[in-house]
Image 1 (tube, rainbow, N blue to C red):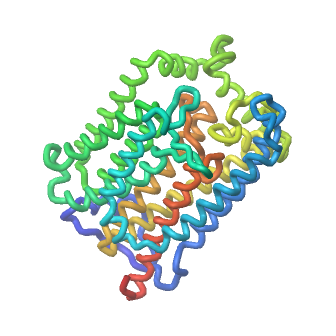
Image 2: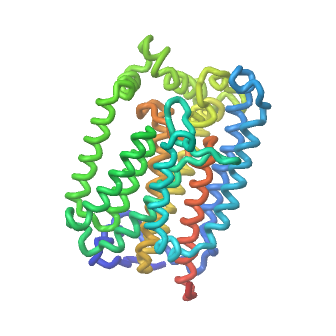
Image 3: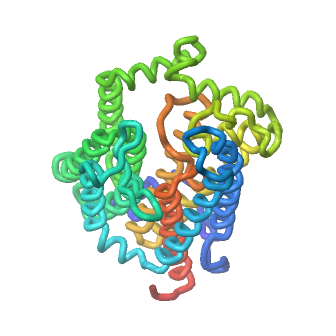
Amino acid sequence: MKLGVRLPSFSGFGRQDALLPSLPTRTEMASVDRVLLTTIGLLLALGAVMVYSASVALPDAPRFSNYSPTHFLFRHVVFITIALCAAMVIFQLPMKFWQRWAPILFLGGLALMVLVLVPGIGKGVNGAHRWIPLYVINLQPSELMKLFVILYGADYAVRKQAVLQQFKQGLLPIVVVLGVVGGLLLLQPDLGALIVISGIAVGILFLGGMSLRIFLGSVAALTTVFVAVIMLSPWRRDRIFAYLNPWDEQNALNRAYQLTHSLIAFGRGEIFGVGLGASVEKLHYLPEAHTDFIMAIIGEELGFIGVFFVVACFYIIVRKAFEIGRQAIKLDRVFAGLVAQGIGIWIGIQAFINIGVASGLLPTKGLTLPFISYGGSAMLMSCVAMAVLARVDYESRQMMRGKTL
């Protein structure tokens, strides 16, 4: 076991040693982390079961009367199949490829986010224009942008190591670029994706060498922006107030309707749940039970044990991502290491927000639960991100074995 290995101090990456305990060498291990892959597989399997359970009663509603009870399960399995096939292809691409194409992919993501706002191209649902309809899947550019921001942010941190602690030369250019992304997300509108992408960008830049003073300033600035966006939007402001008092009669029957029924679902589940398939809230009481609020159905049917299992799986994925990233940085593969840790930040933030919303810890916001919720773009990009993470791990292990990449 290697102990006490420190990172190069010239780029600010020395702070990585404080994040996690020292790692064992990977020379005697498999080509990729089996615990990581097993955990992802368990979440995918659980998600398929829970999507079917949460959606099986939807054809009873007039809106879905033409659907069969297995409609959403079938589409979800198709999404998983497409995502896994894409992941296997993505795994074959070396990290040098991603570093070389990171700026181009980022510009492509920006172009898609502009296209989604064009009438006749973007698809609108409930006042939001976030999807580009394709034959098999409705593509959501904001989901692609989460990965593209990770790649671009990691590449930027590597290229700007010497000036990253200076605001004007190091951070101002990327702040402007991310401001454009934020503006496009607010036009959709998609505040949830903006929060996740902002967290990813700030996290990568901090790990890449941003000074603590600028980091805290960035967090304060982002917080101010989010508060301003909420306070200047009456319906967002009303949603916040409803979240603070969901059981008020006006709120419970209106803006906090989803939250109150989600909390009822968690309450019914108690420790061991009411049993798989026995949820009452999925019977047209809890809207979007198979997407944004699937965690409530897990809590109701599988209880605290099921919720704890899901949280533990996400902890493992985030932990593994940071371990893989730290190992890559120790091998002087800074770009790959930051990408791995950026993926960990992404999955961690999004899972925390989704579970926090469903449990009443955070205001209601439309974000899917990675690997579990119904949704094609989210499933595709989550699995692609895991393929990139596995590739970082694979290349590190190959280097530890003395093989050239």
